[in-house]
Amino acid sequence: PHTSAGRIPTDKGYRLFVDKLADIKPMTAPERRAIQNFLDSAVDLDDVVGRTVRLLAQLTRQVAVVQYPS
Image 1: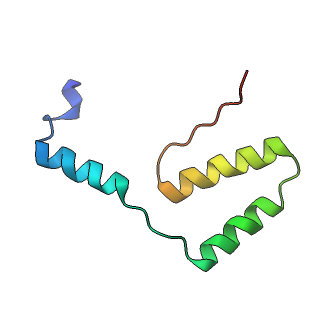
Image 2: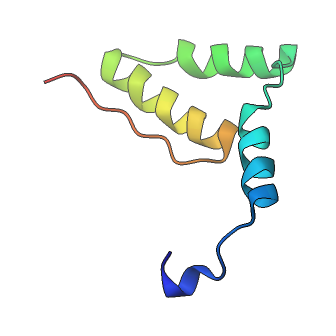
């Protein structure tokens, strides 16, 4: 690991991280409506993809990246 990263996580720390990644929570009805409204106003495929990746990043609080096939 990089020197600024601190110490190496323990096995228990890794396990907690992986277990939390696997937690799936169902969306609430208001969340579903908000997503639908957000996407309904998209004007074309590029707009839908851009909106979707931004929304994914916001909902997951993670980095989201999209790449079109070449």
